[in-house]
Image 1 (cartoon, helix red, strand yellow):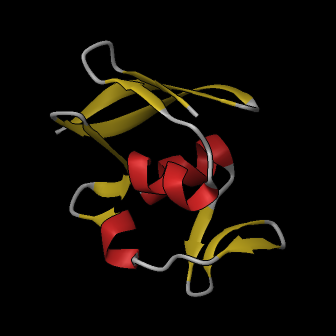
Image 2 (tube, rainbow, N blue to C red; image 1 turned 135 degrees about the vertical axis):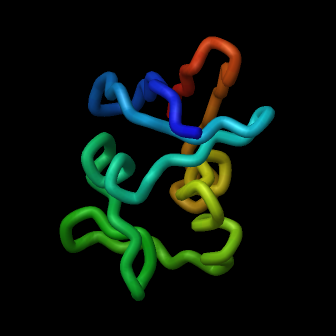
Image 3 (cartoon, rainbow, N blue to C red; image 1 turned 180 degrees about the vertical axis):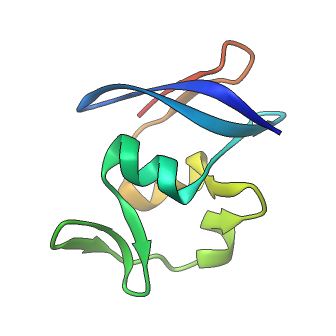
Length: 90
């Protein structure tokens, strides 16, 4: 079930819907694109002309959407998640 979730990122603050399963947070691909500008394509995670290869696509995109922890690893960004508070910072 999707819940309201706050995502703090270098560009500001975004309210998205996320699937929270324990400490795992998953975002719909559309929410990722709207909040952060990243889109999952055949060549990897892309924002504009910049693409970052994704070695384990199945780990990144699973049931419920894009795993925020795996996303942070792929983009080499630090991540802090407080699932109970419904917030994360990249």
